[in-house]
Length: 379
Image 1 (cartoon, rainbow, N blue to C red):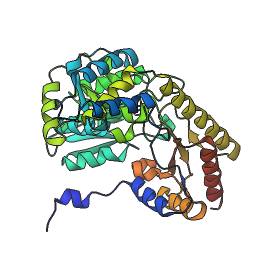
Image 2: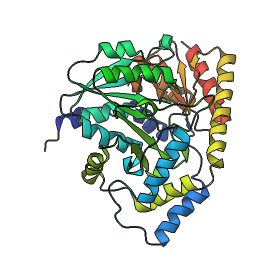
Image 3: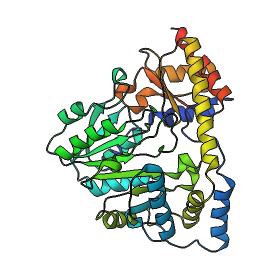
């Protein structure tokens, strides 16, 4: 029996290859997984349980329950610094589904999308499923792994429809300032592109905020996507959302029907409890990630390792100085029982680097960094 060619040919994420091996390795130290190691806060769990007890387990509107959409609009004004109406909010099954629904809405087969390299591999997989043509824009170490608007402009053709940006970045932890976002917006404006902005780590920031391009969007061309997974340790609840320009919400809501119908009702009420309840746990989790980052950087300095200082998200981007990333990651598991994500899983420009997840204890992260240094020095 035949399957669709693009699905058969689409490679699995290079992260999953390492994860599969790691789970088969006894006593493996997991630094490859981008998932908070914290429990979902109690008041959020209680919100989901209460919804089940109260029988709120039926279909909901495609775009989400009204009270959650309203609470999200309030959060965006309070936290992200721009104003949207509740009707501009689409609740999705995680930020990944919000991004995919947006791309389904914007891309015809053969249209071009600009993706970062290195960048989250699911971006590429989504574009492949939509038969879009991917144009990568490079993120280079000499530029602090930030995009060059001029290089992006040079890659645009008449078929280009979407520029996707991701700040704070997975895998890099980089954050864009307002000046860079204004330059990127000017490129999109000049070529009439949509901007899809992946901001799922928007509240996991350390020294500075991570502004959204939606704050500088007079034309209504920015779709900003967010997640409850990282901020509130709610990965398994599968709730994210998109803030879309006026006039697009009805179309994107229509797309939700064949993709997911709607997000689980109890999960939406848990997300509502997250926004309406105390926020101290968010601060505590971010403080913990910052402490782990600082411990990791101190260990890298002590061992003479080169890295990019992460300003957000919970990853450390570490150089292995020209070694093949996948070979290095496999060596590390086989020799030290330590799992990390190879930089090549995020694109060609990621080769020679690895991503370390800070979603583990500081002691575990430092132990993993020492193991990396030992394997690196064997060469």
